[in-house]
View (cartoon, rainbow, N blue to C red):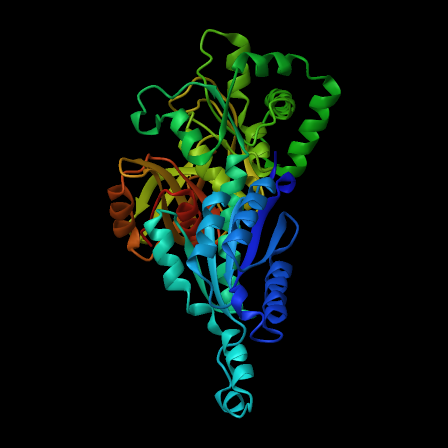
Length: 477
């Protein structure tokens, strides 16, 4: 499953009161037109709208709830078009069993009071007013849903207003992210880096909370696939490296061919297991084939990451999730950790060895040979890149007692300047809290030492996604 193959099924229903239709001519048609307007704006590639129509009685609410199940919706947009009874809402939401976004939308920013008061027919006046009456039943609906312990979220605004639709778009992106995670397959290959207690996690709980399928995959299989790669495939992949990377002159053809063989095998490996993300670490010490595979994996895992299959080193399950989340939002999501603090420039240097998200690099990613992988077995080629200069978001999936997991977020800026040319990903990040303030505030939330960095500021969408997933959320800047 990839993002391009995943479709969000968004349920939409308007709610109203059947008693009004015989009293106020044209009101029902008018409100159904508003529902159609919302449906048209929600529909786009990757989103299928299941329009349940205008629900105006408890019986129709029950039927719409059953239809929601049959249509397998992922989220329900509940458009309050006028006054509606809470007993019309409750059975629908109960049966749908998905996150609910209450749309409290007026057709216009205000009633034209003078034109309204010049109307000669008081019945027509009331019918016109009722088309603006969406705010009236929202407290009633909120009361009942809260008492029923059914979470809901709200958008209050004007039907065709940009600000309103920016808010709705955020909820739509969050819902798509939640649904995409629940359909994703995360491969785990190897084992944890011994002693990193902070990154160890309960993968059963990961599946329970995020819906992610965990697939245990074997290093031995990847090594066997590497042995089957043809000379033509190796030659083609070396040529790909020359196009996609800035290969440094001191990279030997032997190392390029070794990395090419593993990269071609990785593509086949990921396709065979239908992987959407991968976390890996394996020493390979004492096993020549596996050591060769794992020490030549960085270019191939970088290419996978750029193709929306993020790869996290050191078997960092939580950070593979963070990277997948950021990539699903179109922000990228590259593996990172603290490198150092530049107190002179008041910024933080961050990066990591292993894969980099080359699609969000500032310029072409360099390939450098390393005689040793610090703290790890082997030697070979590695990637060196900085994240594109401009706004960035850091995301950590944090384990915590109250809500099992929370999203920890910081927004900042990737800035130009000197970096450490050591064959790793590394960037210079500036935060509104300052370097000291950021480090203290981030650490205080108890994250693992890895996080994912992506381009743009997506904190608000992440807040919405956390709300839909029922997990915690903290944004420090």
